[in-house]
Length: 118
Image 1: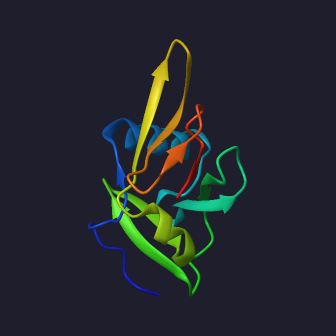
Image 2: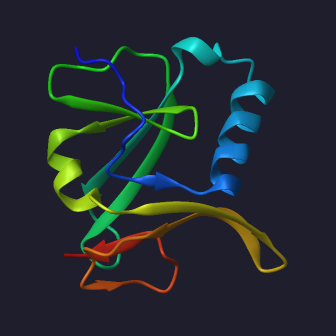
Image 3: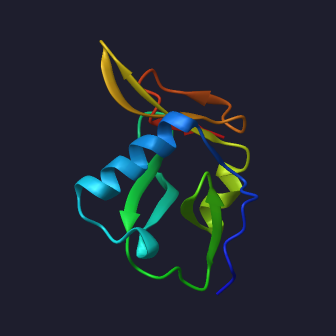
């Protein structure tokens, strides 16, 4: 298992970092043992969909570990191929609130912003 470094293939915006830390606190999760698992799975209206989850499981052998703005991030090696250069933002607007992915690798994405094709 590698040591997390501050250089990450993905970037969390300030508002995403703030929201993630808020969720960790609200749910009473242990900050030092909690990871933001970011991934990609088949499905969604454009072929792939994004996965975000807060986990306390130690990263596995095929996982890459990073930190972004003090948030520990883990990404499985297969998802990393599709997530290089992604920015994750958090929007809280009249039309809704949630995490938004800005993926430079996506050749198209759906209107909801939760799925893409590459």
